[in-house]
Structures are given as structure tokens and as C-alpha cells.
Length: 207
Image (cartoon, rainbow, N blue to C red; front, side, top):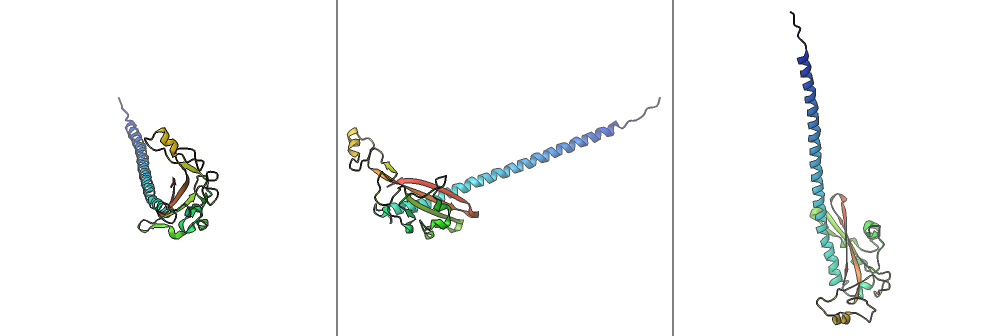
């Protein structure tokens, strides 16, 4: 009886090699995806850290604006009745974009109508520049009145009785609420960082 040897063994080895190449390709794709995911995570972490740093830096401009309003050139009611370019201050509400940011902070050329660049705060060692502007939320200059200004009432005295609350109301100026209505001021800040990255911050306050 004569036996003939077949090539089935060689065929099986060829299939194993093919499967091995497919598995290797899948592993390479998975490794590339994992590296890319890690890179994305690192970039996001860096962006979050950068944004947090810009937020902290913005406090410098907020402190400068608050100092002007409390103890500086804008500390008196009379001084705040007219605009002051030297102090980055507008006695009337500034035009804003859809996000509520003053247009003068978005355009360097128009900023000269409200403030001066010499007031910019530069953090040289971090390549950061802060620019800010204060605007009184009034339609007109002059004495602030509820008819043309955004006003806010002071909070009621803590722990007071009903009679204390009534006595606290300012009836002479037509105030309605706990205490004398006060005009609202808006402080808007632009932080420019490395590679011309910009972040904007805004707060409102009363004096």
C-alpha cells in the first residue's frame, strides 16, 4: 500500500502566520489609540491648569479696579459721575457683544476712547498682560438715579426686627427695599497670555 504525504501542515502554518499578523496589527492600532488618548488627557490637563492660572492672575486687575473705586481717584460719588479715561472708567454703560463683554476690550483701537494702555498690568516673567475697564451701569452721566441706572438694594440688617427694617428704608429717594438703593458698577477684565491666548472675567459691585 502506498501512502501520499499532503501539504496540510504547511497550509496550517500559513494560516497561523496570517492570524498572527492580524493580531499584531490590532495591537498596534490599540497602542496608537491609547497613546493618543493619553496625549489628549495631558493637553486637557494643561489647558485646565492654564485657565486656572489666568483666573488667578485676573485678581490683580480686580484688586486695582476696586482700589480705585474705594480709596483711589474714583472713591467719591462726584468723581464717578463723569467718565475718566485716565482711570479706565466710563460713567455710562458700555456697549457689549452677545456674551456681555464690553466691545472696547475686544478691540485695541477703540479701547483708547475709554482707557489708557499705561494702566495695563504686565506680568513679564509669565508673558501675561491684564487690561480692565470699569463702567457704571447708567444710561446718562451725572447723579445716579433709578430712572436711568441699574440699582441694587443693600441686604436687610441681620437679626433686626420689622421696625428696624422699616426705618432702614430710604423714603427720601423713593427707594423700595431694605436699604438705600445703590448704583451697580461692572468690572470687566481681559487677560492675554502666552501665544496670544485670551480669557475674560467680569464682576459687578456696589459701593
